[in-house]
Amino acid sequence: MGRIKKSALLLCMGILAVLGSIGAGAKQAEAYTLETDFNGIYGKEMPSYILKNVEPLFRKHVDKAVKKYNKYAQLREDDYVSYTEKVSKEDNKLGELMKKVKDDDVLRIYRPFYIYNAYSTQSSQKGVSEYYFLVSRNGKDFCKFRLQLDDYSGKIYFNYDESDHFLQINSKTPKNMIFYRNREYVYGETAEGKETLRDSRNTGNWLATDDDLAMQEQYKSFKKLSYDQKKKIIMENLAVMKKGRIKKKAIKYIKKDLGKEYVESESDKKIVDSPLTAFTEKKDYKKYIVGGVVVVAVLLAAFILRKLYLKFMEE
Image (cartoon, rainbow, N blue to C red):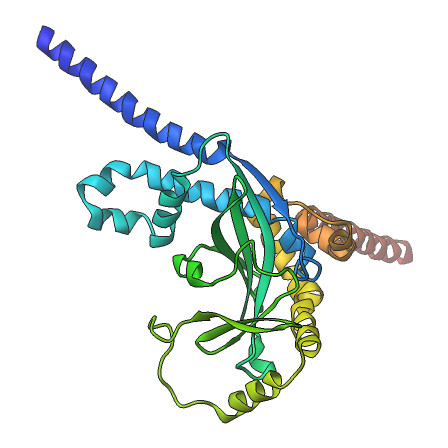
């Protein structure tokens, strides 16, 4: 009997230890200090609904990944194949990355930037807009991540891709540098000159296909422009996401994703909080429909009673 009690006690202690380690891991993801700094030419042009919600979006998706990473820690040791079915590659990499972060660390999201696709026609610029951010840890470069905005649905996706580390953009990159892509190359340019920031020819990211003549001409034309002319085109392209239908869709999606954590700017509030939007978002339309049905029913009943009354008076 004593052995049974002892075994039960050890089992309970083991379970508590596992739960404790999971809880500690989850807590770590919430303990660090998170700051933002959006200096630079791109910080002035990016949509406010993106910039104001970078911090809660980062914390939500990173903490979610870390909790999943910790939850399946034992499975990762015992059966890695089964682990990969539970935890995505991105979440696993984020979990490994955030293990380095301590409770008193300060993470700073800064230097937002955007890579213009110069190898495309103007109409094909639509699809997914990618907003990049640098992250420092205690003042030193730590990682990069992206927020991907679907230009049609307005949905926003958090993306951490280790391959972005090969993109040579960091805290030392000039703040006035513009970025653009020509197929497998990413270039950075200032008024002083141009440099190659990434060459993806040997990564398998690009398929060998016949070049589209229109796209070739597009890039040749763009390449001949001055720094200021290129900058103007890039910023105009970036500004499209700051207004119109896509903005409303994106704000609606972020609000739903973040809930109470959503941060709204005054300019965004003026556009979104129209009577119709407020009416539908608060879902008050149900009671108004019911009320409308009741009113119609009352009016119909009054009309029928009046007809019956007039008929009675005629008799």
